[in-house]
Length: 365
Image (cartoon, rainbow, N blue to C red):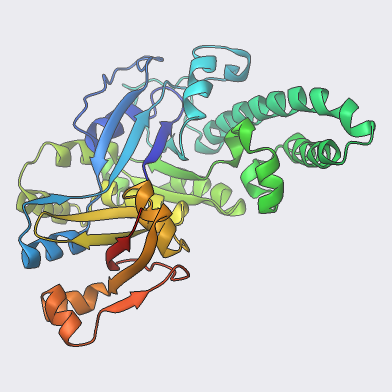
């Protein structure tokens, strides 16, 4: 399954600089609003040491990691929900992503103008929240106008949809994002086709200067308090450091560079891990002489559905799954050795795949 994250934020907060560091695509970074007009897209492999370990053991013809698609979307301004700036284009692009990464400026620099003339991360976050909430309200109110009369006529299905829409509407009227609303899976399914923006999971990225990379600064603390209140996820990164890391080709050089700043891993790695946690994703592996490959699935998926990400035929004709735990595979060094030691288990349709499982599927179509 593909994972798509949209990088959003006000103009001049460091979105495109961060995007350049994340991918091989070079988005233009400039000191004026709407530098990014069409969304730039970067396909980035997910770093996973387990994949490299399996490849060293199996020595396959190819090694295929899983990928995340990052989309750098045009800067948002106040009034975007009404079409100000590039609002309509922005909001159309953001509907297509699985998760939102909101970059918030937490640094001072007189040479980089702020669209509102002041540095206030909580205010910046509130502007984007408000614009997305207004757009969701617009979508919900349009749907209410369509189903209200049918619901009042006694149609049970329409009545249920209408009740959910009104509940969502009231939550937005309170200035709250829909992701903070406790709704059942059944309720969410009734409005799924609206692709509501504030229902999407979000990761807040506090973009700081180099000296604030480790311990943050007052701007970060202010934003952290605000994000914590809504149960959000916050990461602190320095886009300029990430850009410098991206220019280095050797892994050893990157590690030395990170060590100079007291960092154990890049912001990219931390962002990918946070994205997986936020979206409740895990990885399983297939390993053979042709290829060693990583596959991304949702936590809690059963074996047939997990097999379906390889090919729909695997799910339709699922017979069984042969499963070896990652640590066991590494210890015995081959599938055959694991089988001879009784460490390969045969699992049926109810097996819930675990992170790191090394799997082989049997199917018949």
